[in-house]
Length: 155
Image 1 (tube, rainbow, N blue to C red):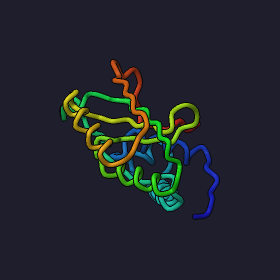
Image 2 (image 1 turned 180 degrees about the vertical axis):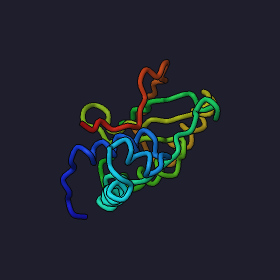
Image 3 (image 1 turned 60 degrees about the vertical axis):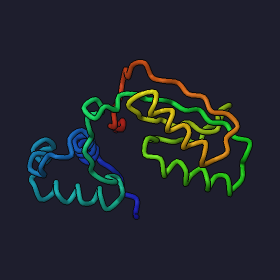
Image 4 (image 1 turned 45 degrees about the horizontal axis):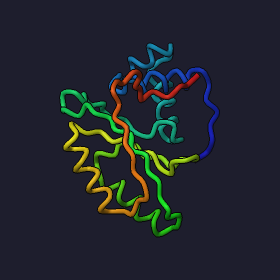
């Protein structure tokens, strides 16, 4: 993938599609003051160069009864390739884990888990600890989602 320099129009297109990927090329072109053909070429170029990874639908969590975010803080005494491969396979296999990060500081890993209720979290927890050896697991339940966006800050 060659590196391309993004101009103001490319950034505007990225902001538009990350807010609503269902817009037609005509609608995007109108918003960025281009005709359809050059707008389409820009979108194709942004996709080909990896700026647009994929287009998805964001689902309504409440309608699906998945309203609880749990932040899971994990510590391990294992810091070797085998353990990391096992942990990676475990987190990939558990659908309730929506995000996973390797951290600096006191906690080794941070997971964001989405569940319907405490019983679902307990079942998740039991599956996780059965798959991988962990030295400490602590969890915090989000009381209120004060801000949530999938949009990246493109200036």
